[in-house]
Length: 285
Ligand code: C2E
Ligand code: MG
Ligand code: MG
Ligand code: MG
Image 1 (spheres, rainbow, N blue to C red):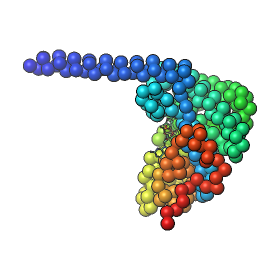
Image 2: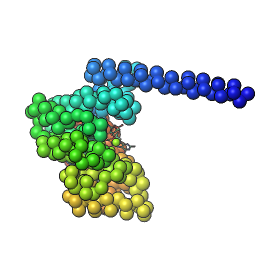
Image 3: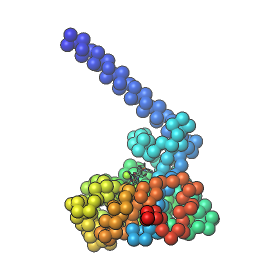
Image 4: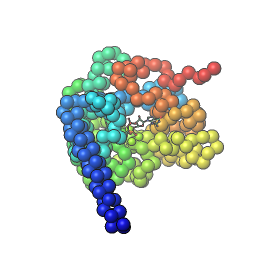
């Protein structure tokens, strides 16, 4: 009985495994075609001044326009893209689309703010990100001050690597650099200082646990104070409630981003966000 059981278990796992394999291979093939056919698009989420709600930057967040599945979020395909190397053409398209969008917004005459682009550790390691950015800026006649790059902590760790060189190349262009998802990795303060990062985007897990009187408020306060001490702008990610915003204002956090202000929106909808006095929702009566 035990033997039979083992055999059927083996077959069960085998079937499950090949099912997963087929799913992954299908995804890979589809993603490859999507990249070739330029089926990727950028959504934009505003980042605002914590005190006033005035727009300071737009984060570009990639989406896959899938013929059957609709809008596919990045977490569902960036890992596959990294495993297959497709992240390199995707990265180039993202940079191209962001610069083209900036040129369009400028042509529309709205008061533009920088667009912030996500670059994964794999891209920093494998791609001449600095050169790709420089070429795109030139192609669309965009000022480097209108681009920002977000890199996760793990990307910036090793000195002397291609990643560290690319970080320096990006800085040399005059493009600002932000540490994304800060607090989830393991960068030391000396590394942050050495790499001359401009700001910290504190991971939304920290923001999510902010309530008056909670010990996490002290933790966030410490991040703000240390970040400011080494000259960095502090941005809170994932702000979803008025209470979180109020606490962040008390803590002296510089900028905020999150569903409380706006979800990521298509470029056409983002146009309406420029030049507004504030993006904070009106206080309910
Ligand atoms: P991220 O850079 O940390 O981007 C923030 C993510 O949090 C976005 O998810 C955004 O929609 C979501 N978010 C914003 N505000 C809130 C909130 O108040 N509550 C909650 N629960 N979530 C919020 P999204 O667009 O699904 O992107 C996920 C991740 O995919 C990004 O995290 C980034 O690491 C990666 N990603 C996005 N676009 C690109 C890209 O063009 N290239 C690369 N390499 N990675 C990208
Ligand atoms: Mg980001
Ligand atoms: Mg983040
Ligand atoms: Mg992230």
